[in-house]
Image (cartoon, rainbow, N blue to C red; front, side, top):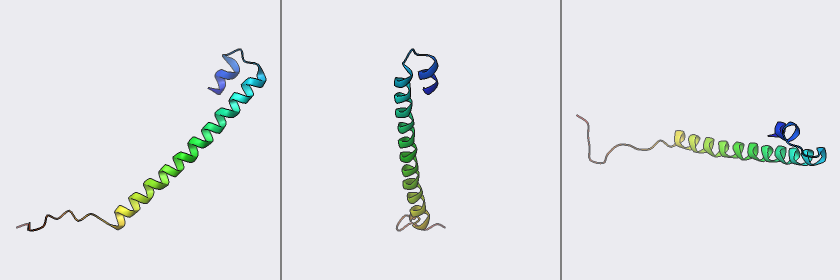
Length: 63
């Protein structure tokens, strides 16, 4: 998108700069959210590894 701002549209350089900065800010926020979501996932995985589900069926014995 930033490339298009500079080369594909007839935006004044000042406006293109403002929009490019906004795109960078958006990308930084997306990265931050991605890292937070990955941390949540890691916590869930760790919890599940430390607390495996009991998959046995009460009253059922294998022969």
